[in-house]
Amino acid sequence: MELVAGCYEQVLFGFTVHPEPEASGDHEQKWSPVADFTHHAHTASLSAVAVNSRFVVTGSKDETIHIYDMKKKIEHGALVHHNGTITCLKFYGSRHLISGAEDGLICVWDAKKWECLKSIKAHKGHVTFLSIHPSGKLALSVGTDKTLRTWNLVEGRSAFIKNIKQNAHIVEWSPRGEKYIVVILNKIDIYQLDTASISGTITNEKRISSVTFLSDSVLAVAGDEEAIRFFDCDSLVCLCEFKAHENRVKDIFSFEIPEHHVIVTASSDGFIKMWKLKQDKKAPPSLLCEVNTNARLTCLGVWLDKVPDMKASLPAAAEPSPVSEEEQSRISKKESSDTVQEEEKQSKPNAKKCGLTVNSSKPTKGNSLVSTKKRKLVEKLEKKRKKKKI
Image (cartoon, rainbow, N blue to C red; front, side):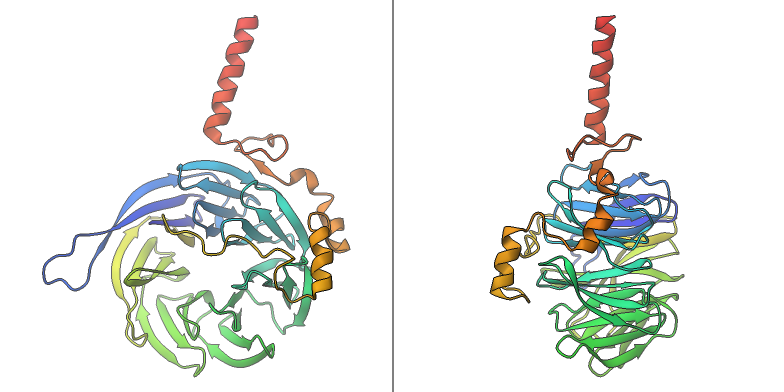
């Protein structure tokens, strides 16, 4: 298991975490974090992190997405399609990455070949956040154009647009996909999927910076303060509140492993903390471990080694979907080339920028993957050849 976190200081941190041997009579097992790497790849502060079973990807204000192969522990290259700060990154299984940025684009990437499959002009303003439905067929996005947009990922087009009164900065599906939440400043509107209407509103004391579902009905909320709160999405009451950090909490990540339901928190105070949740969400969680990065943290992810992705990829057009069988057949035949006109207009000017590059001023030819170490080796061999010719 590896905790990864980005910061304002342009660095990505990695800490390997192992459970310590249980002491006799000690009911709470502790975990020990060990520094694994610090990597200074970006030229501006990091803004987003996403993780799947093999890769960690980071987005930055420098408008690039960097890829790290966690199995081989090497930098894998950089995606340079966006023209603006990368605001959100989401993996769906092992095959697809979806990115959003301040250029208003949502891009769907093949996470094997690292090719840009689709580039959609999603919002007139910035894309501030996106979330993929557990089925992989739908996605939600919010932007600075005061809209909430639903995307049919089977067809790669907009399915529904809802105007909202203010700019939302977070949108998130529940684990079962029966509801979703939209965050505006310190308020969380809870929507039911079947009615697409608000069933309730949760109000936090300060502006909300991050949320994560602990179950289909319990939501963990962090904001511009030291405390984290657990809310019940049905009764709208606060189940629990506990002080997690000495400064505002920037990001939360939750996951389950055998015998443990864990949340990880990152704060501007420089600490990454791992907490074990109690069965009763009204009880505050217990601290498993903490590590001080001495940096102003901005984003967080957890790479779980040896945990396979249950979802391999986004669903093919031929699979059951919100569209009819006739539509599915048409999409299946034209899957590689069929995009909406709006997408084509947007993606053509940026076609040359799409693909993977290493840390150099020149992009690699085509869509081949070239690691930094391999590139340096090739450069050395070329220099030797030139010397021999002379």
